[in-house]
Image 1 (spheres, each protein chain N blue to C red):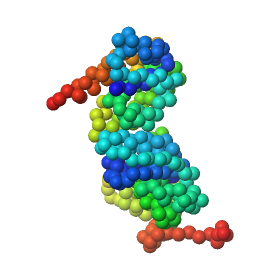
Image 2 (cartoon, each protein chain N blue to C red):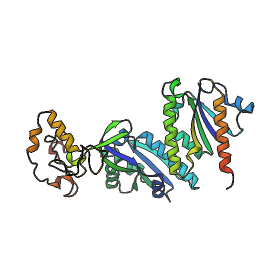
Image 3 (cartoon, chains in turn purple, red):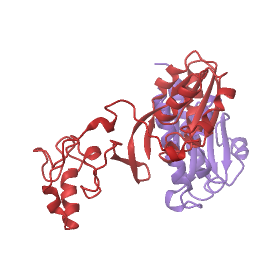
Image 4 (cartoon, rainbow over the protein chains, first blue to last red):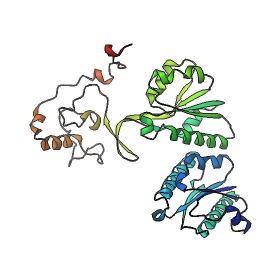
Amino acid sequence: MIKGFCCNYTLSVEPEALRSEGLIPEDVEIERLPCTGRLEVPEILDSFSEGAEAVFVVGCQLDKCHNLSGSRRASKRVGQARKILEELDMDPALVEMFYAGRGETEPVVEAARLMAARVSEQDQPG
Amino acid sequence: MIIAERKTLKELLGMIDGCSRVLILGCRGCVAVCSAGGDKEVAILASALKLGLTRRGKKIDIEQRTLVRQCDPEYIDPLNQDAADFDAVLSMACGVGVNFIADRCDKVNVLPALDTTFYGANLSSGEWKEMCAGCGACVLHLTGGLCPVARCAKSLSNGPCGGSQGGRCEIHPDVACIWQQIYDKLSGLNRSDEMKNIMPIRDWTSAGHGGPRRRIREDLLP
């Protein structure tokens, strides 16, 4: 399972619609937040504990965040989570921050596919 | 404030290995202000340890709690009633809190989650600098308010060492020589002549070299 967190401004459609259209892989689960600045480090880490193989966050472009600094905060928390993964001998690239323009679905889809590809690369033997 | 930083997760996972129930205990004092051991850091550590344990195929019940302070009996003593059944209490306070729990709570197995580092000031968000060594014999009135004990790599009392070059410390070239700063500060206050007064040899007893320090104020005793 791959867990995604998006804010309401970057993802204006229901995540289920993306899956039913075949735009994102079946095992990608996306949670919409009022703002990615609301996301805390424990939520990212708990996603891994609950079975996620990778986590991605899609927030507003840094200079166009609806809540001014929400995506900047999210980006710092993703950075904190990456450091913790490293401490636990996990690949920090399994958590990543992405940015999207308001209502742009494409960057969210690309983020989900990129993380899915990253996970399947890691699953390859050797 | 007292500055501290979290020990590595590997170290902490090693400490709680074999436990089945652990309490992570934060402190809302100095360590909360320096973002090392407040409510937020307790939550992050709990999640990080759970993830580390999951990866090791282990499971420990981890509870979280944060006290107003861990350096006052009124907050610590209740642990005797409700924390003795934890296999370990992982304190996110400074070393004072850990010691105080160990002193006052016989049945509590307290472990340090942080390394306590220094007394410092907050230069900007995420940056702290040592300003005081708690030596117990303050000379700041002689040095323009700048501490040569804490801020000189050699804790010199009477001017810079021979290694100070261009106003920089020879031990840490990225650090300004505090004696240069003292001179600049006193000069700006028209007090530089005071530097000709030789400070007497320091008695380091008050700095803890005579054993643990204690202060008693009779007027405040119960």
